Length: 238
Image (tube, rainbow, N blue to C red; front, side):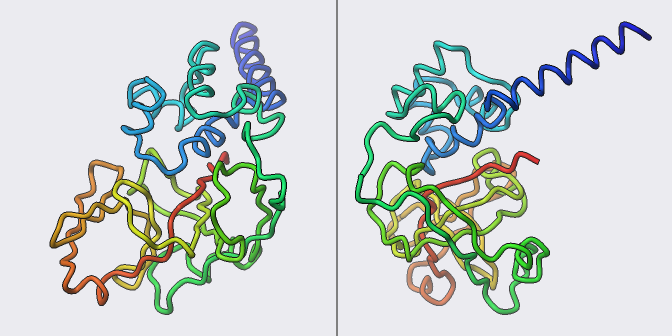
């Protein structure tokens, strides 16, 4: 019994240490550094396997010091910020950019079946959220075009998990292959990667168990509405 108590006590102490140092939120900062790239593309960028990156993003494991330095260098972010959350998010900043802004929740379409819609209790409590613009590498957007909403479901796991907060730039609806976009499709909002295949678009989920959706370009304006590009993903740590 005393041995079990010691093991449990050690587990609590370890968790408290991770929380106190900010390490436990590493997956959130890694997701910001990923900047909407696919898991495969990001893994290639930092020179690691997709499986390793997936474990980091899920909070299952944490990188060694060498790997932490490798990620920080590849993403052009300070290693201290990546490891602990202390200091500035980016090495280079636009000094003219306001640091903290208040972002409204994106209005869901009427009759939406998305469970994260306006009747969700979280939306009743929180209609706006503060956001630090220093956490985004590029400031090529109008802050008034930014919105947020809580993701639901597992279609974009491991990139986006249930209840993660997504920051959307509604002023950026130009499609680039492989990036994440908030779309309105079938009277509901969802997050998808979009690929251009000549006569049609593919709506792709990062979770392999979901099949891609093909949209004929001749009917795309009636079937598909691009809400905006995903510029940041804030991980839910609850």
